[in-house]
Length: 463
Image (tube, rainbow, N blue to C red; front, side, top):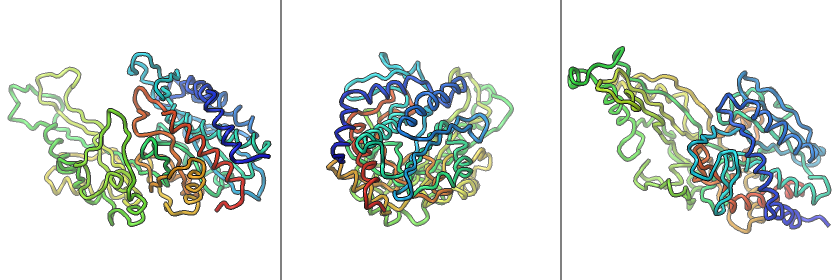
């Protein structure tokens, strides 16, 4: 007789027998980077050759749509409908990756070859996001097999291929197909757990806001011997301007950028006791950095951060004896839904004027990904926590939003669905750099968790 426990056994056998590893290896082999225009065919091939046949074998109808925006990757839509009696679930993933950065991986590793070492699967996309959506689909296979080809609920899937370029075109696609995409909840996977060994549910994501700061003083550089000490150095002016925006210890000084009413009580409550870390040997938590009076979890999940992503003045690759003509910094704000990014630009301009920096220009301000959040106490969140804890036998940590960005706002805006993100990776996975990897321990747990979720969705008692 079909049972939940037997479905879990099936899924774990897929993992322990290395069949899942071999499937993931095949996915990694496809260099589907959306950030390199030479790989458009590989992005298309990932959907048409790797994912579409897999889904069709599970009874999905599959369509691959051109992106509504020219020059961006296609979007796969699949659905498996069993009738009106069960809930309808929407899930999401992305098949594109960042650049391979082939020459930067350490000896013995390659971005487009899965390599196993010490409980880690190395390869581009293992963590972001091929490994994550492949785990979820493998769990679905196990439940379908155990239930004899039925799920007991309806499932719709979006797999985009421009997430690493800001999910360009996804908003237009979801708006256009909103009726077909209607669902009760979005349950999907991306991003990191709070700690490698702590199963996590995030109910949203922080947004990302970008802008440039520019000091442009003259047409070209001037001799540092003849003019140094006489003419303004734009790098120094820019550095002082930045110093008025954030203090020596990481406290944001442009206070109109911050959540208007501090960390909301509901957010503070769900983060009480939440661990943060596990970022690997190259990352650390500096206890004196950031907003005073907040815990590490509140700083990264309940507050905003300001980061200088790049700075340039002169020719760093070949310095010359000249006072540079200009300086530029590209900056980012990671923000929660408790802040309004529409006011960020005006607040910065007012701050620079007040602090005596009329020569510092603000350019190219934009929201790359808006913030999103579902109430951490939402019934679908509580239901998923219960399902995961039953499968894993351990506590699940709920956070109000992940620290990074995902296009959850698109699904909230056009479909009105609650968000349940279940990450299978961790902060130290190096997902946007060389040596990206997926930890096998959290991956195995993620497979078990999703098998239980897919099973429970076909039973009575869903919200």
